[in-house]
Image (cartoon, rainbow, N blue to C red; front, side):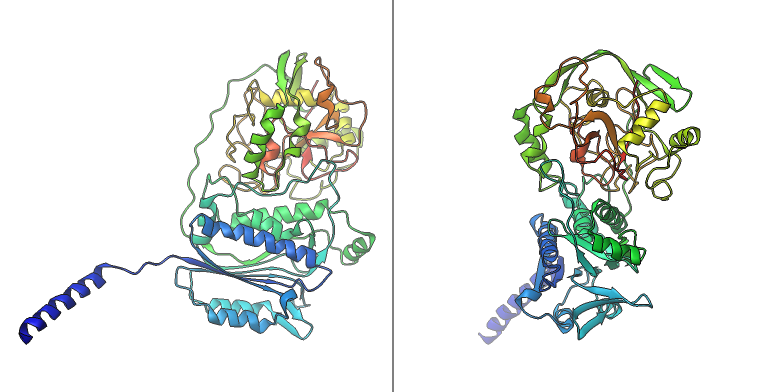
Length: 541
């Protein structure tokens, strides 16, 4: 009897052992995040609070899209004093597995000393070298570790836009992008908001310029593997754009001038490496040639035949467009599209328009012949390649160039007809699908490897054989901007309102979302007497 029981127990034990061998424990990779927000300083609190919203909304995608588990700890100085020891205690208490990710984010004050050593300030008696945190991070045995700081903070306000609401940076939330960044990289990311000798800036509407630009750069159209190098380049570009668009107070101007500070340039001390290689993107076929003429002064023009086209959009499309736009920018609202209504038929006589945007090389000839002053950013290496479109030019500068070349700026109607190239009811010059393989806009993905203006002609032309009608840089039009102009616009050769505060720019630009690339999009926030790094032009006649 005892032998029989023992035999049964032995068989049962053997069965359990076999089950333990073949049934492996379930494990899901986890991203562990510590967010430290020094929101107890009233001078920067509005910006820091916006940072909190930006980060948590962005990282929630990891769990929402089932990319990995997310364990997030948020420390608010307004809830009680935060000490540096709290950070190190959290590091001691977290136990990541080998394939996990660990991120520490700090938003608050900091400084860099004479030896370029970076410090984070918890209070006047609690100042921690960045290197000490890195040393502790390097002891953690997980695949990916990050320290991201938006410190040395100064709060300013961006100027109010002329249109209903400013549109933000960012791309369509894409599961593959987050998987690329959080699951397919290994190593250490050490990233901060500004370089040595600079300030980090922010506003109550955007939060920290660096934080807003960085976390919006996690998103994209998913057409290619995304690296942290891509994200950091986009974050730098976005931060510089926000700095460039800021109207500083006299006091802040004096601070910047006293230290000879001309921008805000995020800095990466180290970057993780991708685990897999990029995917090669397929190319786009070129269209057949179109009738052209050649200008002795500045190149080739394409004939746009006389005829009618439908300009703008129907009011019934606004709801669908708003939903579509929210996939790329969560702040999208119906007011963005109202100035594109009502859709109306327009007749244009035939005209010529430049095949390419006016380049620095072309503009240099104009300056040499006329003695015209050089535009803003002319000596900036980011913008002065001979084959890049000239930027920093005012509307008056663009008009003066056209006069010299025996041409003129295109009307808004001429620009839209040329961009549409005969396609009816499509969002873009190539159709309805947003893709970095067709244009240079926010992000460096696929064929779009430029964080700034690309040399002209690097993307396939549209059906009329025109290059860069979407993306690269906005283009000045002849018309004044009036959001209600379409309600009274004439059918025959419309030339825009008689007066206004700003002139229209069209086409979108690097650093701006795909929303701006739509052929019907109207943008009227740029002042005609100012030069911007995102605005160029082409001529018509």
